[in-house]
Length: 232
Image (cartoon, rainbow, N blue to C red):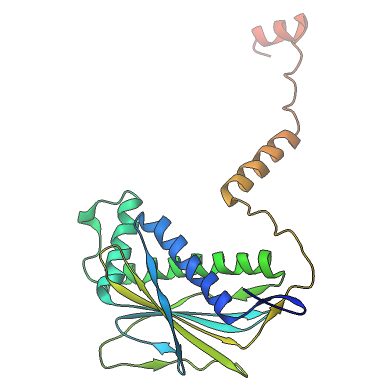
């Protein structure tokens, strides 16, 4: 981050770095392999979906933008396989082609986690809020180029190269309105909550608040016992 007279400035490259870190964090955890990205970023003039698999998510709120991930078939298949194997699925039951719907569904799920991680950091670190739509996946052949128009007044567009453990490549593209966040005073970022721990805590609180089970009915008196013994 840079500094000016008003304090710390958080700009396009900082947002891009935060997004890249979300990609590596989510995919590294999901695949149990090392995912890394290039130290060089490209400034581009057009954002789009490219073969073999393209995925995009729109977000809006404090600022608007579009995130695109373009996977080569080999990168898509590697990420899918490593993720499913880490989940305990036998290799014999996995899809063998990147064109399979199952591969697209898994990549869409991971894309959703990536942007969710990113939007969470935006809320904590920049004290603003952005919302996202559901990721859209398209399997594209070599002859198709789909451009995505974005409702941005002064778009800034960047592309970053990512590499899998097997050195397969995929690309992140980000288009956002030109914007800067200037830090006016110090503040503490909110604590990161573990969703599973939060759910367990909530269930424990509900269990404590639940009413105690009703006491067992008092023993019947001698007359009731007598009537029952007579079948009455």
